[in-house]
Length: 383
Image (cartoon, rainbow, N blue to C red; front, top):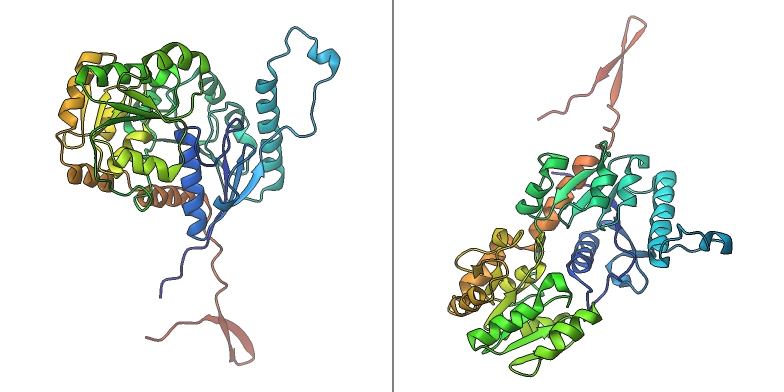
């Protein structure tokens, strides 16, 4: 009979700024919540180091903060004093990494954040941490990796792996996934939908323009993370076929996306994965999107229609094409490529490759007496 593999003690290091809780601030927070929840459900001992307000049901949650440190008045008055938020994040990660280096209480540490300092301090840990690359190359992360850190980098898409190749060489890919038991197929409906953070790099204003050009009403959902952008680019476009419903929780988001004819995705940067695409596919809603970054990795001709980046007229055409696609085929694409259980399987396999196998049980011996001598004999199981 096969002995079940032992459970693992896993540390997930998340971001400081946003809680790992619904409604999620973005895709990384949703990814961390899902990964922690499913690892815990599988019997692993998971500790999530995250920002204040994180969901305690996902495992053991410890506050990632700079408790106990405030610079002196003289230091704060120096010309080199950075913004408070920068210093708070820096000190929080510094304290955590020094603690992890000292205590050695985890089998695996996974860096599921974008901050440079945990990467720069990775060599202090007893074994290399897993570094989830949810971003194209940034100067801070490249700087932290320069010279060769002891990390195991993992890209969230083939495009992201290629983007990091000049720095890291060939690295494995574990695509992001969605829980297909929570993101269930919906009936569709007459409107288009756009979901995500309302910030310039997500390009929601272009989605509004494209939907208007296609003659399709558009509903937007997500936090107004950049108020200046919202006031200048989003608010003036609302009311003429475009509606913003605010920042929704999971169940409301599933219902709204599932009741839409098409999801519009408008990255104005090189999207490393695009979790909103996977979520849309899971509920059976086809996608019209700009072909930037990893978007073409996630979509195929049966699940979406791509337009040249920034081309609003082409995107309007893609909206009309995507609306004609078979919702069952769209859902099947999610089942084949975006199943979160496959994602968790891949991470657990990766973790086990980092952890030394447990020592073999001592071999039983029998004692033979031969003319006064004692010789050990290895026991042999009989068939």
